[in-house]
Image (cartoon, rainbow, N blue to C red):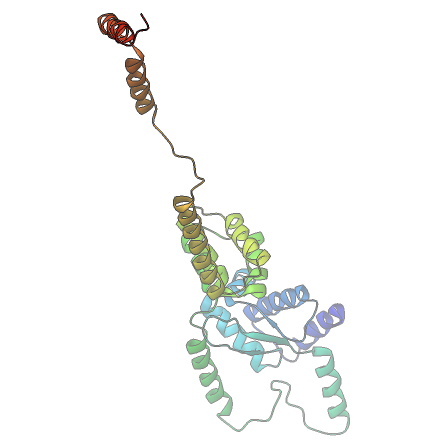
Length: 278
């Protein structure tokens, strides 16, 4: 995509296909995110990220997105659950060239719509689209809300980094890393990222894989403990007080009573005399 030409075409199109200020802000935010993906034809981005970048609240954001779609500036496909929608930036250069070609051969061009609609069809479609978004996008950007509720305000760096991790491993794994950081009483994105990096190094890319790793870790720990208590080579730990008492008993046994020693010598002498050795 030629960014400069698209920008020029965008502002040219505003003269005959105007947008609200909210829709203009959202279009620029989407172009920025598309640029980050190196202009992929389709890309995913959470609504929370777009709202922060465009400075729009949730209601204004949804209205602006519907406006951009209806007027042919973008296309997007909502996803179920916590998955971010898929967006596609519609090339204004191609649209303008197509419109000029159609106009030159005498076709009537409706500048406010990309398709022919019957009276009342657009209003019905708009209502259906908003209902679909409400149902399918209720959990969109949950990781961003969770962070702000439990860690604090998100700066631009954290937003960019978290968005990259969500794209890489998914919202579920990022959420799991944040929960584990909170369990350790650590409330920084750096600590969350270190957990994600450790998992990625082990090839762990899902919550199920994390739980499997936890089970394996507990099993390894139990095996080490069992080996320690059953091994015959392990060194027994003897308390110092026990050693002192044992030494006292041994020293006491080594002490000789003089009277007992004299009696023993007399017995030995008599025994020798009886045997004829005296």
